[in-house]
Length: 115
Length: 116
Image (cartoon, rainbow over all chains, first blue to last red; front, side, top):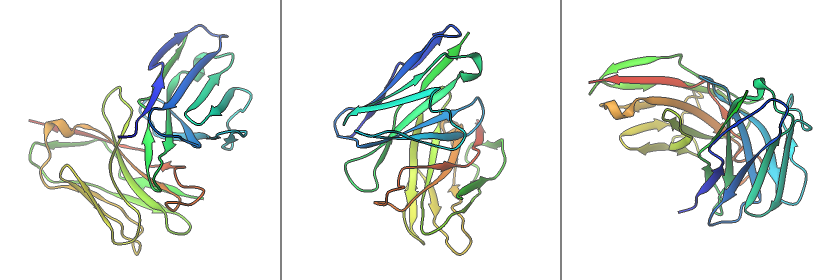
């Protein structure tokens, strides 16, 4: 069946560096993907909607210059956390609309730890 | 805007006990409703969903009925197992096929622990 894969699953980086997380639809084309953030023991918050070939739509309060989203192909969306700081440490999860109306698939999540 | 409220946890049960996790929502129009499960250190897995009023979603012994009159989507299971221990999230999305479909609003999550 349709699968969404995220990479890396875990990343540790130093403060001030940038980290890129990939969200890939493996056997279908995803024109729309979503990025969520989950703090420890908390719920998921939608960060942005990633649209293939156009700019991402960010939710209120999400810094677009901090969290760069690129959806350059029909199977790949990337989230880049720029100049990461410890407060950016979180679990980032992507999802994609499937090829059939009503389908929605989640990636496995990427845990970012900023030292 | 949309919102989802889940019963506060954590919930601790003995194996074979009956489970109910309450979920109520606020939304415009006719949202789709979901229950997701998250095991420790993992991503989300869809447990069940319902896309219109009076629909019942079911999977692995879990059930939830879309009640528009009470704006609820309570999760139930008749006999829980230790392997059901996880965090459960209720969520809603815009109408299936609509432009906002897939933008999920999540409840705060309910931690379920089942003891042997």
